[in-house]
Structures are given as structure tokens and as C-alpha cells.
Length: 227
Ligand SMILES: O=C(O)CCC(=O)C(=O)O
Image 1 (tube, helix red, strand yellow):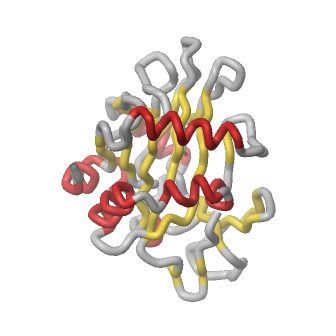
Image 2 (image 1 turned 180 degrees about the horizontal axis):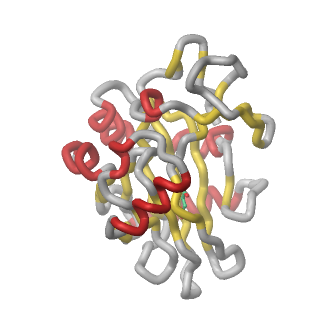
């Protein structure tokens, strides 16, 4: 079930049928019951909700994450991406380079800094980002029509890229649409260049995006916040 070679080579892999339909239904019901303060695209800082924190500790997810990290796996951030007819959005090509940290500390290679919903963030260097893996749990089928995540395979190996470099890569690498059935997982490295389009249909496309690392200390004196 774990495709560490595919993730190492391409920066992503799809693992189908990890959660049964009933488990996904329960998770959606739990999420619906929470009084979520959401952004337009979904919800940040999901690990403060016990239901989401418990899912992040699911042995199946920890097993996949620790195989990909080749070490233990600690969940440190959860984001719900909720694309629907009432909240239809797109994201342009980018890499995930901002990390939540406990405290601001000026360390070479880290920054610029910002604060989102009370949590301190810094853009991180490639050496820190290479120690992270994300597992995206699909709460709905993602299809070619409802704005699936789209990736540029292999770009996770190119380090932190400028906007111009990302733009040029998007013009010369064929994108791959990560179509994943409900209950399946997409494993991805944060540095893979990715985007998603607006949905063209009425079907919702909800994803729980969980990030894992082996240690909260990614650099001298910088500790990840659990967010
Ligand atoms: O779920 C999506 O469509 C976008 C996800 C994304 O942009 C991200 O993880 O940074």
C-alpha cells in the first residue's frame, strides 16, 4: 500500500481505498457538527479540533507517513479544503513553503514571516520542507470536472522556486490530474508544484490535508506549531 518509490520519484502517489465509505460518512458528520470558522476555501488549523486530531493519528495514516518519512510521523497541521458550488475557488501553480512555528526567531533561510489566525508562519528553506509529507484524505470523489489537485510531476526535486520558474515549468511539464475516489489518499511532497481549477459541476470536492514530519524541530531553535 505504501508507494515510497513513486513519491520519491514523482513527488506524489495515489493510495486508493484507505477509508471505508462508512468511515468517511462519519468523518463528514463530525466535521459538519463542529462549529467551524472557515475561510472561503475551507478551514485552517484543524488539529485544534479533537475529531481531526484523532483522524490524523489513524494508524493507517501514520503507517503511510512514517514509511514516506522513513522515520516516525507526527502530524503538525490539518487543513480542510472545501470546494463546492457555493464556495468555488481555484489556486494557481505554487509550492507549499509556509510553515506554522511556535515563535518567531530570525534564522538564515527562513522568512518572510507572517501571522495567520494568531499562528506565526515563515517560508521555509528546501532542506526543512524535504522533511515533510502531506496526506490528503478525500471526503468526496475528486474527478476531472470538480477541480482536482493538479501537479507537475518531479518538481519537488527542484528546491524552492521563484514565481517565474514555476510559470516556466507549468508551460513545459505536462500536468497530472490527481483524480482520487472518496476514501482514497493522495500523498505529496510540499515542494511539488501544484494548482487546482474551479469546479465545473455541482459535486462537492472536500479534502482533509494532513501534514507530517518526524520532529517538530526543523532547524536550530525553530519549533513547528501544532496547527
Ligand atoms: O485542494 C486544493 O485544491 C488546493 C490545495 C492547495 O493549494 C495546497 O495544498 O496548497
